[in-house]
Length: 157
Image 1 (cartoon, one colour):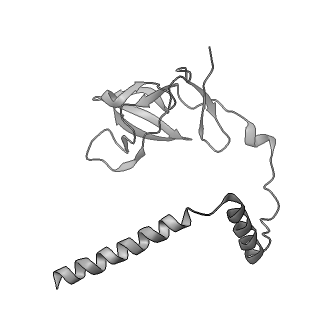
Image 2: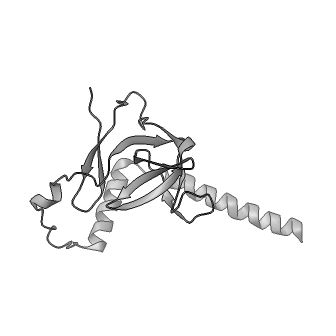
Image 3: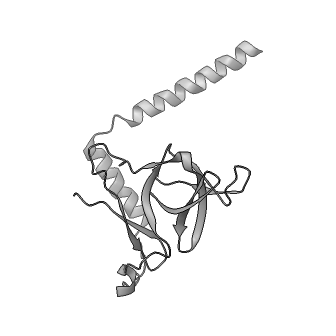
């Protein structure tokens, strides 16, 4: 019985592998033709008018507290609601984060958005490092957008 199940699973896997390999044999012209046919089936799309762009959308405001641009020690370091490993996790650290000067028992406060803060162990806060090697290692917190999002700038010098 087990041998029969394994045989059926192997046959199904071989069928799927064959289908995947077959899909890769289309020429660019065939793919273009299929895309055009699919677009005819879907029909036109009306996304509506674009949202209004106001001057307020681009206004930078100063931040509520002094902050510095830093990076987490590892990707996806957890951020906590309180300076305690048992506190609720409220997110993960982005590759660039706005850390405040507030330190409590080895924890550093991070400005998330607007007046929302989180905490990260101070040992997990490093100098800013770019995502792409060779890019500038300078990072400056430029302010906040109208919606409270923290804005960063990466000046060349």
